[in-house]
Image (tube, rainbow, N blue to C red; front, side):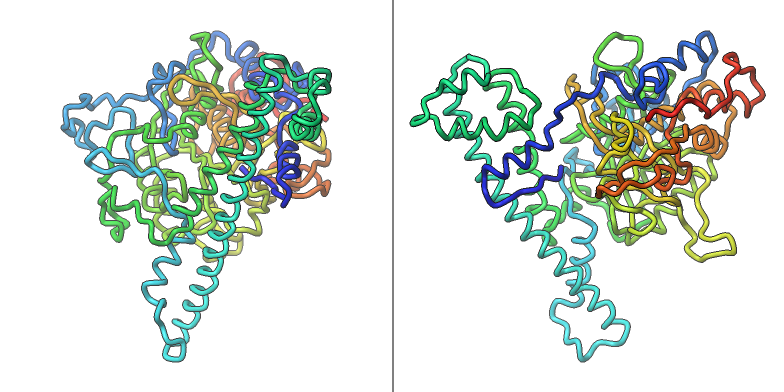
Length: 558
């Protein structure tokens, strides 16, 4: 979460409160229909009712490479992949695939003793750590030309890591101050109001001498919350949770992310220098923090028939959990192995809601992408949340490999879809303000803002990010694959991209107030849509289109 802070604590609270949503996203909005519901969902419910009802479907395995999935969640336990060749908890590799007791998938960031990596450094920090071993006490005058270039890179990277760590430390101190102020204000407000609701009338009755600070707090906060009505307990949950999350995030940057001395690989106990090593880790697919992966899994395929919580996009899916993403940057070795594990164990689609700006062992990931391409597996990847142009800024992993240019440019994997995030709001605010984009590097956009989905231990929460948009596309892909099982991965990608609903209007470019044509932000200029994709698949496979409609030509939502 990104928060703009100012020097004054009160101004900081006011600034932060601008991030509190004054309008609520419609429930289940990512599954709604642009024409019937007037919102940029992917038409899930309408498609099942109008086009897929009564049709036969086959089961599809979708791998979720992430920070962990809770396989016992009430909305996921019945749709989890279970390794048919493995006997649970017997300590034996029954199917002889190299992974012992891999019932729901595998964890590449855990140790054989059951301990798990929670936090890790950022890739830039790891690069600095490696270079520091070589250049910390170097004499620049004695370095070769190549070494001088690497030394200069080391100094630049080290300065960046040090500055970011110092900035995070300053943010920690400021958040501590803000939380102290908020907690005091809420304590005083609780004393003043008791169980009375927070209303303009009740606040105005407070004694100025005793509760002047409390009244000032409310005067600045409440107008930004769109007429909040509730008691102090309700307000506390709204305000404190996000600040506490932000504080923890900045602390983790200081203690782990930008700390070159931190090395969680001692937990995994692999030979990290051996990038070809594949058999390490443990079968704990949940891990210490499974929120992100559980949320992603729910978007793809939360049980649609149990009347609990929410509905995922796809029926007829089994979720394979592959844990490879810590709180910090994922490591190339683990990503490559996670992709290979998913492919080797039957996944047809792999969702990858993660990314980073540096990839020192990019070739290892490229080999795994090619491996998935060779074995006809579709890879769906989140474009990132930095509001950046991926055509100009590095973002890994990505679809481009074989960096040597040909007459036709750099080669791209035929089984890769890169996804940007949409807001539920339409028109100029259609694209989520945080989403990365790219005329050549991002393929489509999908719902990714205020998405309500599964959370660990039977809970449900909202979350935003291209991390949420990617599984929407993976879910749509799974539906198409289940009803049209003979489609190859590259054909599946073609159907999804060619059926994306076009929008010809202008939108705010992420990270700025500039209005640009929506079509300039991706290769398709379109929004993923299940109804259009099903109709396209019918045409591509020579099946009857019962609606008589033409694919990918629905009304635009403006």
